[in-house]
Length: 141
Image: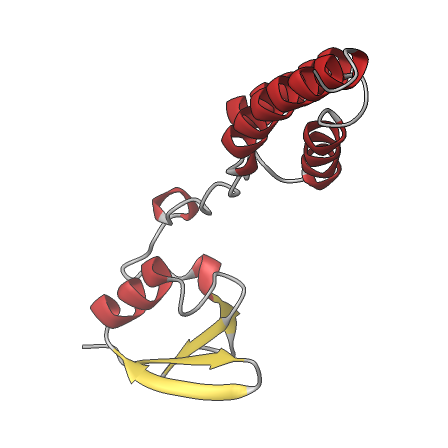
């Protein structure tokens, strides 16, 4: 049985059997760019050329897909939603409450946690602001 040595980050690792090298490659502990050597081989070679009894490049698992965060970059929208919801209590409730509501819905569809909170605050701000406006317009009666 062949015993393999692997060179990774300037360190020599091993010896490893075929199964161990295959497991290290598939687990991502070593990469195809790392080097390997076994007794009788003329020098170190990239693991991408190892066929353990030889892995073809297609038999290595593909890299994992990138993680997509649908809420990334929504910080400004979250701030605008809270501002609209808060301002709707004192100034032009229909305009600011509606704006906050739209922003909250957009954030909720992006699965941003703050979306639902902004929706509720905008509705409450619109109601409280409208009642407050009516009271002020009627002289508090």
